[in-house]
Length: 265
Image (cartoon, rainbow, N blue to C red; front, side, top):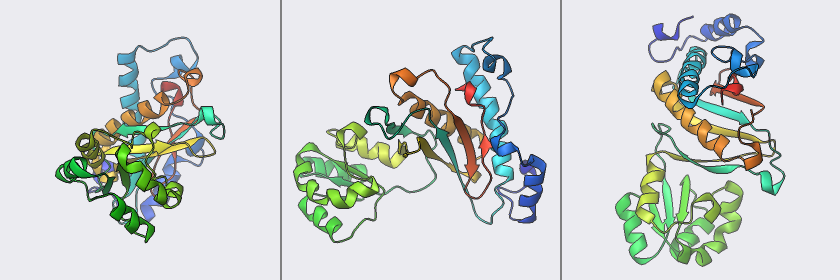
């Protein structure tokens, strides 16, 4: 089954069954062995340059399988799930942060900025979709939530506190630790619009990051995956860094999970 022979992404649903038969029932839980056997046995530690080459080759093969199994009649999304070796229920082990994907996620991101005066003008000039202070808070309280990212300046936080019960459960409430309370408004808006993605570990210690669409191609998806994995693993507490995670899985929206060899990261 060669995904390169299909125009973009296949639409024949029978190809999905053929793909699953070709992959075998054990594959979703069977990590690849390519380029990592020595590192996995602990006999050899790859230097950073060799590790990057191994990661890219490994991801290319995994993404070939992911794209082959994306057989729905639309351009499916591709994501990576990282099963961390942390206890996300413990405050000191929570993992969250931001990553700038080199090629974005292939979707338009609507950004709301809570700011006043010159900062509000700078946000509008940088391309923010919604800008305001008390009046924007009133709209949010009235049910307006047509945005995916929220930024705020420090002076707007007291007014924004009224909307915490609405934005907080959706993970949208600005927080200094998440880098969403900003002083350089224009730069923050541009980054959010250009493909900056927020991530956080769920209660089970799993972080999911969207990498883009199947139509991106393996090269662009691999670049995004390497950036996402570096950010997620780098956000772990110090005592966990350098240790393998439990599992890393690539998948399309409706495709099976393809396990990566997590010893490469």
